[in-house]
Image (tube, rainbow, N blue to C red; front, side):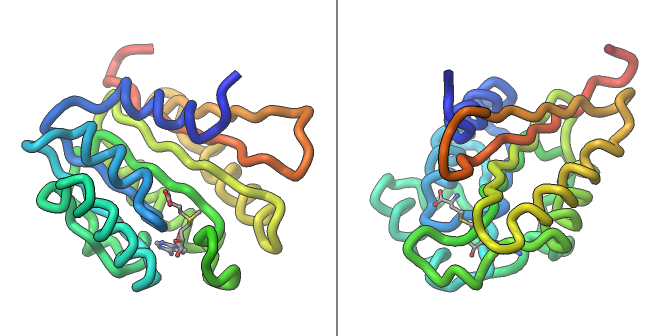
Length: 189
Ligand SMILES: C[S@@+](CC[C@H](N)C(=O)[O-])C[C@H]1O[C@@H](n2cnc3c(N)ncnc32)[C@H](O)[C@@H]1O
């Protein structure tokens, strides 16, 4: 059985076509940004947010190593800054919540900005498009963030969105879980 991050990538890969516009809402060290940049191809565009200069620099370096910098707009900004988002339609949005591995643990995603960013993401999502959130509950504030994000997603209308929760339930040390949202095509179940 797959870990949350791997399953997130599989869902995104199934929903994204070459030339698509996608968002990495928490680029961190840039692993998901590279994954997304490869997926959208030379004609696509990735918008990658992070509030930390250190994360933007790490992502830039990683993209450069892969020759992918020209496909990505790096945004040193919070993911709830609506003006920085690309216009609809967006094919996929990846969130990897929590703190930067190896970084300052106090610079962590919060319920307020994560839910605000999710509101933007769901509004701009293309029919057939997908939002994934890898969620951590082991750090201070993590459970509250999970609970607020889950509450927002549970309230999405089922005629327009399908929401999934995926977690391994016999593992120690609070492994991450996955929440995912797919926008439906109008008139199709
Ligand atoms: C778990 S890390 C992301 C890991 C990343 N996906 C990778 O592949 O390395 C979470 C990131 O979210 C960033 N972050 C926290 N609050 C944010 C916000 N409001 N907007 C954008 N990024 C934020 C942190 O700075 C941190 O780099």
